[in-house]
Image (cartoon, rainbow, N blue to C red; front, top):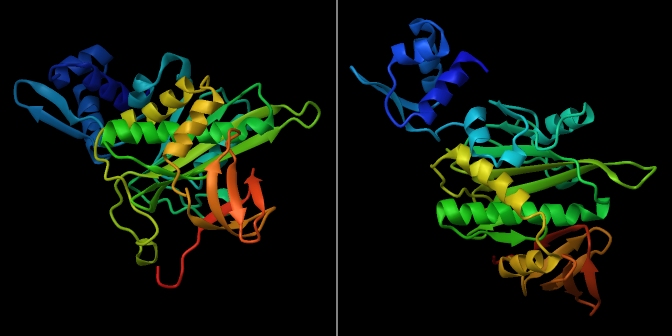
Length: 317
């Protein structure tokens, strides 16, 4: 742990201001090293104040992501390794590389922005600063068929976190997009490595990107995306999602499906389906297996297990 990280930990664990001298003695470093660490933390966006004769304290420890703070909030069972970056090409790409190299389960990769963020079907995922871009590694003993359930559990964990910390309700566009006021705020990408001999999973990498508070949105995306205007503790936010996901792993499928039904953005709406089945259809329900039940224009009723659906809009919409 660097001096900066140790100083941060001292400040967030203290209920009272700490002087530079006290911190320096505790860490066995010079006061100059403490001063440099404090300035470095401030430059990252942490709101640290110093009072004469009292010491330093954090006004709001949540202003920027910090691995020590995330670890502090994670359930003990989820504490493996946390890596925080200013920018990455893609957190999923980095997490997959770590998984291939033997990275531990619950290893967390987080970046403040992405230069080559990816969604489903290798689409670009807009990933500016002001979002939370996070991936973590799982090493489940289940089959590849369980990846749909995993994606659904991540969506539920995000919805519950936003409800608790922002008092806002998100809607789910089957299977992996979350919307607020009919605009996208979050995407989820689950990727798997399969053992071809046994049919079991080597690992899963679950990535999500959520718009917390964007400084600006490009004109071409203003009708498509928005943010949740979250300005609270970012470290608590990301840890809450991972904790809630872990806690929900034993949820019965009927409870998962019921949550999706209650937050179903597409219920009774017309969509365009692409993939194995193609065409315009009306969304009827989420099935007991977590699939999307649709009725095509030619009266074909189908249960979609994969593919893509987008809301159908007329020219006037």
